[in-house]
Structures are given as structure tokens and as C-alpha cells.
Length: 353
Image (tube, rainbow, N blue to C red):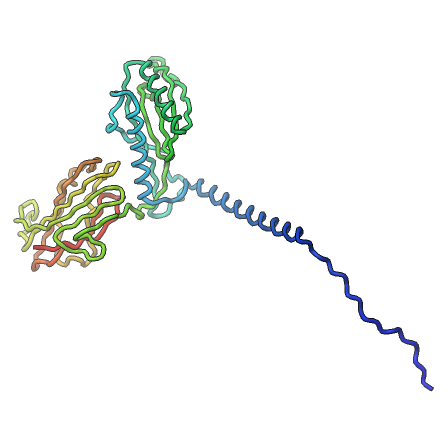
């Protein structure tokens, strides 16, 4: 009889105990993870801001620079208006250079530049009492607007033979970040009011754009004898009509007269808060747009005097462009135009009589 060794009884395996995670632990872990992500994001942002500030701040548009320039001028004119009558002429500001607003480390890419709008007004006072009275007046005005004011000590004399007035000053920063200062100039010894809009990096190709275009400059269907463009900053341009003219020696030089000679009038009206500087290269055309058309040198004569050609605020400038063609009379003239370096050039399609 076969025998077998005794065997252990078969029993079902007992499952291993499982750890139960409480809801509080899950929430705590979730909050810790969220906080870690937030810290990492803040750190990346802070590092990015640090290097951006090291490079001179963010790259803005030329339109943004134009706005800040206008605000810097307006802040000074408003401050002049808050002084006693006759203390200064609000429209006689002088532009101040800045040596600190420069790309010394080569961070700016192609098309990016930087400028610092800074302006100064000469102040006139009969004596210290009148000056201090105005200082107290603007302090009250600025603090009433919620602007923090700071005292400026009298300038230290640098030459004993040229003593400076021991007049203190005051400074503040307005809601647009414009630094405003009234103090005695350390060099001239005269009281001045100055505004500083800060160093601005901007893309020269991202210019002030048009808010309205009509006629020959119409965005959808350009054409007609004349047209207009109004830019966002208030600068207004009108072009046309094209007029046939009898060529003069100034137009043709020693060459024989062309078969057709025309002139086109461009009028720039400045309704913004800052001057517009015009250039002879503001007008152009696309290659092949006007076959046979030539632009005689020296036009417009208004822009070839060798000096800056600015359209002051509230003023208008009329420019006369001349073009010729030795072929048959063209049906239209296609040009691009934008006043100055900060305004976008647009296409104009002018009919020719």
C-alpha cells in the first residue's frame, strides 16, 4: 500500500493590507505641486525681466515712442502753465541730449534703436521769493494728484568766482512715468523746468499707422485725383491732384525737355503734440510701378536746404514733387508716402489728367 507524506492544508492567500490615502494628504500634495509650479514660473519671469532690463527694457514700437515723446512735451507744457504768468513760454522748450541712452553692449538687433525724450524750459523770476512761491504752488498741485514729491538741494558751487543761487528744487513722476523737475541748472545758474520720458527701445519698422484713408489712398480701392490720410497721432496728409506743368530749366537741367512733366502737391498738417521731421526720401514707389517715369533731383525744393525740415504742432507744410516721362502719358501715378521716419508709408494711386 503506497503511502504519501502528510500535506499541509490548502488555504486561500490573505491579501496584503493596502494603505488608504486621506483626502487631506491628496489636497496637500496638490497644493505643494501647484506652489512649486508657481515658484518656477515666477523665477523664470524674474530672470527674463532681469535680462530684459539689462538690455535696456522691452522693445516697443515706434508708435509707442512717438506717444511717449508727445506725453513728455505735454507734461512740461502743463507744468509751465501751473507757474505764475510770465515764468516761461510753454512753446519754447529745448531738446536735451542723453549720453546714457545708448546700446553700449550691442543688444539691439537690426531695426531696433533707442531714444530718450528729454526737454527743458528756461524759467524767469525776479528773485528767490517768487521762485519759492511757485515751488510751493506746484508741490501742492502735484501732491493733490497723488504724485510723490522729492526735494532737491541747492546746487553745489563749482567755481568760487561764479556763485550759484542757493535755491532748492523739487521733482516728481507723473502717471505716465514722466520725470518732472524744477531746479537751478548747475552750469548756467538759471532756474529750469525739465521733463524726461525715459530711455525707450523701439522697432523703427513698427510705425504710427493710419486711422483713416480716403480717395487715392483708400485702403480697399485706391484711386482718384487726390486723397488723404489721417494718422493715429493726428498728423494729416493730403496728396493731389496731379497737374501738368511746363518744364523749366531747373526741372530738366541741360537735358532736353521730357514729353510730359507733372507736379503733385503734398500737404502735411501736424495736429499732434510733437513736431514731424520731413525727409526727401519720404516719397517713393515700388520697382516697376511707373514705367518711364523719372523724378528730377532737387525736388521737393523745400527739403533740400540743408537744415532740419520740421512741421511744428498746429502748422502745415506744402511740398511740390515733380516727375517726368518721355513716353506716352501714363494713366496714373503710383507712389508711396509717409511723413518722416515714424509714420507708416502707404500706397497712393493718383489719376493723371
